[in-house]
Length: 129
Image (cartoon, rainbow, N blue to C red; front, side):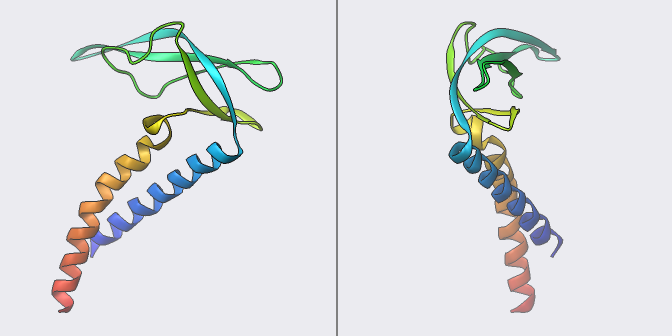
């Protein structure tokens, strides 16, 4: 029963994140950002690179944000243009327009929730059957 509840909880948060990303795509402001820097993140396995983006919002203010994800080799190059979407009332809420930029955590949570729901639900059906 615990696995099923945990799986359903993760499913709830996955759906919530999915809806939040969809609302941002529907109501947010789409613009182009430029990669201005690659931050080096050192780890046990070597260095990875986290892009820093800059864009101009509707009020003509420059905004910067850095990706939550770093990689090696870097996904972006300095000077590269990327489509982003941001919340007009909160320019700090910004995401790269792309599958992983918008739905990364939704996919991760669904990958964790699915087997828990299947195993927990199957066990519950077995016990009650």
